[in-house]
Every structure is written in structure tokens, then in C-alpha cells.
Image (cartoon, rainbow, N blue to C red; front, side, top):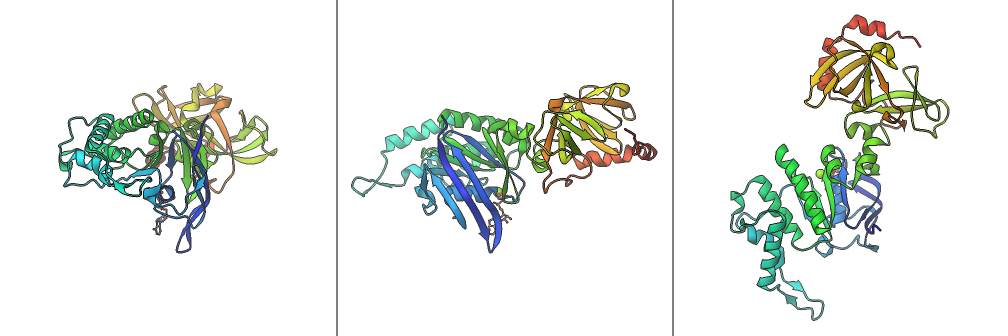
Length: 392
Ligand SMILES: Nc1ncnc2c1ncn2[C@@H]1O[C@H](COP(=O)(O)OP(=O)(O)O)[C@@H](O)[C@H]1O
Ligand SMILES: [Mg+2]
């Protein structure tokens, strides 16, 4: 059974009266890999700093193991932090950077005297860490003789050597290039599992969040938008913000005609969603990979291909339906200008409540603006005109 380790209860943070975290409620289990995900400025770092003890919430309570820790300073929490800027000591070698925290004398609870760890224990713990982060043989190296990825490993080893129960990581891979970042993602996941500790990870990169986490917390504007497993967040986004932020999606206006029946562009589609009012206006999200291309006369909707980009595994195909453009990812080759039909299985349609984010992503899908420009340039205007007057 999962055991709760940390809880933020009704936590609000304001700077000079400006609310940057608005009533955050969140718990983190022991051994969990939890990621705070959201755009820059949404409050991720502030949340992490509250957990680390670097900031006290304006109101609300922070619990660790069921005990209120609002006023416990960082060094007395069983938590350690890895920052994006690694803050390693350039004048110390790799071994001494990692050993640094172990060399600080600790108060002995028995006799209140400060005690030092024996050199032998320091050595064995540092060597064990070097092994875990794959830096065996590097102990004598200077920090400026290391690559960015290696420096990151030293920072992680230094944070882990004190055996914290929780490691806080604030965009730790932000400074690395893509290939290295991918390697380090796997590496971090492996370290977390090997050591069996709790990771609270901050990133604005949705792919990173999906691939590493047990639980993803999606944030925007100081509020939690959704908490769930990567699969939940991707397949069952709560609102248009989450659908847009997590992967690419076509977000459309719909009307819920009955449980399991949603109307889009005056056509009725079967879906798996229910529990809405009859004829309730909703947002409908359809992922680009959930659309099947069929011959035009067999399509539930019919449209014209306006742009095609080869992506290796699939084509990103932009299709204009009645003046509204969709992104479809398919292995079928459909040249620009061709007429196609599409079919969507009931489980490829996801219905969401209208929210403050409804309509924020234009009158069509949230694929990149670059595609938007390309496809606008190639769309034949007369055809778009004509298509706007489709009939039932
Ligand atoms: N010490 C501070 N004083 C004033 N404003 C701050 C402070 N720290 C953060 N903020 C503001 O709080 C908001 C959230 O910041 P932050 O938590 O760093 O976001 P994120 O990490 O998601 O990018 C931002 O608008 C930021 O400018
Ligand atoms: Mg930040």
C-alpha cells in the first residue's frame, strides 16, 4: 500500500499581495515519482520551495509524515534539492563535491556534541554514489573537466549522499541538449527506482513528464489543473488547457446529445463519455493519432488535405474540414489537395466540460502555429468558402 509522505493543504502563496499559488492541495506518496508540469511562471518552483522549506506559504499547511512542518527550516527536513544551476564547488574535485555534506559535523542527539563521520564511512558512501550515477573513476576530476551531463550527475550524487527521503529536482535537465536529456531521463528514473526514494520533479516539458513520472500534476496560473497518471492526463484531460499542453490535440466545440452521443459539425459521433446535461455545450478533444483515414464516401467527416509533413514513423497531415483544420497523424500517404474521409472510434473521442480555457486555442486544433501558416498559404480560398456551407 502506498504511504502518504508529504501533503500540501490549502496552500496559497502571495508576493506583495499578488497570488502566485492559489489554494494548492496535493499529496505525495513514499517512493513516488511525481512531476509538477506547467508553463513558465505557473508556480512550479514556488511549490517546490515550499516543500523544501525555502519558502513559507502565506496560508495553508505543509505536512511531512503527518506532522506540520511549516516552520521547519530546510536543513532539518528529510528533503534535498537539485537545482537547474548545479552550484558545484569549482575548487573541489568530484569526490570532495559529493563528500561535502557528509563532512559537516552533525549534532549527536545522545550527548548534544557535534560529531564527524569517520573518513572510512565518507569514502564508502561517496564511492557508492559514484557507482550509482555512473561516474566511477572520476573522483579526482575537477568540475571544469566534466561535461554538462557529468556535472549534473555529480549534483545528483551530492544531493543523494545524505540519504534524503525525498529529492526535489527543479528542471535539472534544462541545460542539457536533447540526446543527453533523454539519456539522463532514463538514468534518473533508474536511480530513483534503485534507491527507492521519492522524487518531486519540476519541468515544463510534457514529454519528459509523461515518460518519467508515476504521477503528473499539471499546473497553470498558480492552480492545479489536473493530477493523474501519465495515461490519465493524456487520455482523459480535464479541460482544454491540459489537452493542449499535453501532446497535440484537436479541440472542437461539441454538443452532448445524450450519454455516449456527441455532436460535432452537426454530425453525431459515438463516444464513451456520459453524465452531461442533455444538449450541454462541451469541448471535444481528438488526438491526431486516433483519426482513421478512409475513402471520402465512407467518411464520417469529409475534408481536403492542405499540408503534409513526413515525420519518419508517420505523416503529420493537416486536413481542412468545413474551414476548420485538424492535425491527423497517419501512416497513409494523402497528397496535398486530395479529398479524404475520416472515421473516429468511440474511444478516440474525449468529451470535456467547458472551462475558462474553452475557445482559447483558436477555432481549430492546437498544433504548432508553423503548420497553421503553411496550411493557410496552401488552402484554396474558394473551396474553404464552399465547404463552410456544408449540409447535414
Ligand atoms: N520571491 C518572489 N517574489 C515575487 N514574485 C515571485 C517570487 N518568486 C516567484 N514569484 C512569481 O511567482 C510566479 C511563479 O513563479 P515560479 O514558481 O518560479 O514559476 P515556475 O517555476 O512555474 O516558472 C511568477 O509570476 C514569479 O514571477
Ligand atoms: Mg521554475
